[in-house]
Image (cartoon, rainbow, N blue to C red; front, top):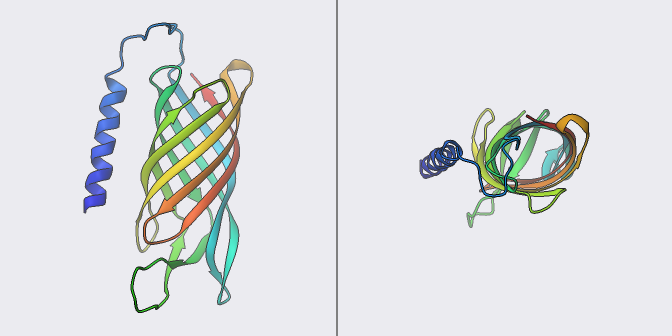
Length: 185
């Protein structure tokens, strides 16, 4: 329950930040594009997948859809949704002293996260946010950290490379690597 309240409080806080920024900032042109949508294809690297009775490191196919609202040239808030398009079983991290292994079955999990984006220069962006992974059975709270490198293309398109890490409490973590495009408007 605490996780849900934290998630909803953060969502409400970020949404008020977005709608409170109507005026232009010093040094910012009126033509600054505020909206950005993107699509990345990638792999979610999971070190604790169980297949045929043994633990393996697997790269599972995934994709990311996202939306960012740019508050100014350096800061944005957004909703980034990662989707792993495969079913898998992982060992659940437990802090019990019994030493029994518990397994968690994930069926094509969908993991949206509210993200804060900081772009200090021309190409790199750093992202940090919180979200929830939804899958049949059990939902998992997560913290997501990412770094992106973008190359501008004509007509406000960008080519992007993304490296991220999802930390799921009491479960498993993933390292996400993706390539894709985005459009500002």
